[in-house]
Image (cartoon, rainbow, N blue to C red; front, side):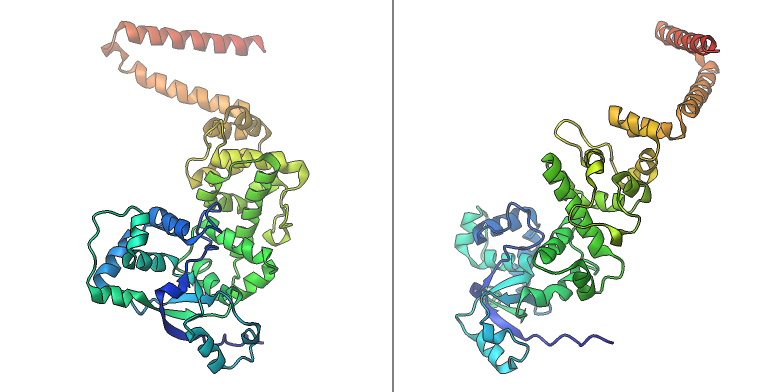
Length: 377
């Protein structure tokens, strides 16, 4: 049965002083969520590249083609019913005392607030400011907005736009948003159905988010790097060998979402987080995403390679051990012999003391290798 089309939401022109920034914006760092508007403005201005938006609005005003999406801060119970008439709802939202929170367009709203408020600019220590023409300030003071009744109604729109759509949030912002929906009482199936996710993007992001939380709970792991480079973990979760290393089911849908990694594998989770993101004592061993697919996936399936990585944190050497120590020795010796043959062809041009010293070292090492191998026979 086809879904009913969503009901139309009114678009209005609304004074900017009636719209608040979203303290639950998924893109905000966890320590900023829940803070007041002053702190939100400071964070958006310093960390979300809104200077270009400010410059554009100062020149052009606000583009009507990009309305904000807002929800009432306090929706009377009588208006939350689907039976509420269009007239009743429009009377409520057009009442000058009704205030709203923006759930899509926080950067645009912040830019507009900065432009029209001397007090905000002073608080942000913005200097060398030139006021835009009065008509621009007037234009920005009243913004176009589409009104939804509640956050729950906005879920399909935000999901399609930022989780599976063309203007995606960064990986951890998506995961945090999904987690808030689940914490609010929705199931993962509900979220997937609401946004039309057929590729398990919702579930992958949520499982990744829970792994970060599990690591934090089990080991008091500092998750800052994990949040910044969350896509590494999502990529790792797509590799069957790494899932087996963590004790996760082959199919993502079979993963227990609350504590995905079983108790007997949490040490492996700690290892993985350290390899991907580093820890207080060590840098990460993963430098780029292909290190996960090309190297780490093979290392975790080889006991010798895994022990070496745990001991040395040298991913390249550990990978060389994935075929076993003897094959690694043969490869290294063959490579060294090839290099020495190259040197042999040109060394007569460089009969220096330094070259002689290095040649002597090679000679001693090769003699010791041969002696060790012969002794074992």
